[in-house]
Amino acid sequence: MSQSAYRNLFGEEPRYKYHHMDLCKATTEGNKMAINNKFMALSWNYDRGGIAIFDPNEYSYGKPDQKLLKGHKGKIFDLKFSPFCSDLLASASEDCTVKLWKIPEEGLKEDITNDAQTYTGHKRKVSLVAFNPLAADVIASSSVDYSIQVWNMIKSEVYSLCKIHGAPTSLDWNENGSLIGATDSDKKITVFDPRANKEIFTHVVTDG
Image 1 (spheres, one colour):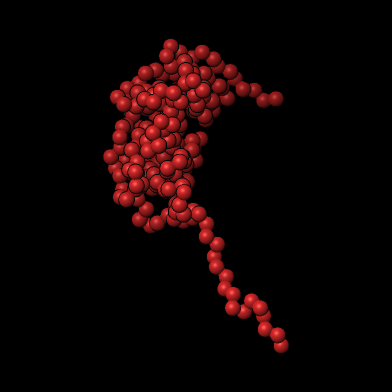
Image 2: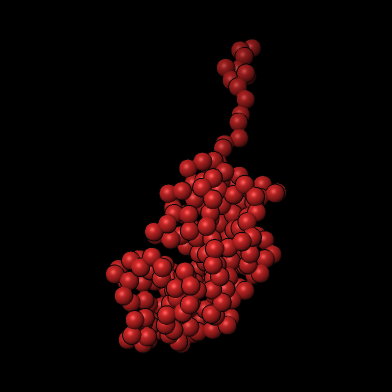
């Protein structure tokens, strides 16, 4: 009887770049993940809204004692990195706030509970956030209080406010950062000029 040529070979489990990730399971219109050239941020399955930070260029594994950004009192619905500062992260939450976080150069070696700034202008959960593409200290957020609010990141003061017609489903600036648009659950598109503090365009999306 001939012996198998494979008798001394042993199988090895494939190595996946990311696994054991305990991600937040909340349903949201926002992004529960954000990534840039230095960091990857993930909304974590933590009862008060934790955010895990990983190096996107390295193999990473979720751990039982995973270090988190902790400061929110509710689940995280949206995450965005600043286009101007790679270690600045914005998080929108069920707790009606937006928080800005400064991530240490080496990532998270311990839990961080002190945020860089907190915005409390919304009355209900905040579902979306968007950095202005040209003005480094301007950010917008939208909430199920049916509003878009444009505010100063340094002073946490509101510049302008626009009421929309339903719960927001998307939020984004135009290329030069002069206008911001949103879609909502009422099937309407709204374009807002924050400098004039007025709605300049509304369109109802119809089927067919």
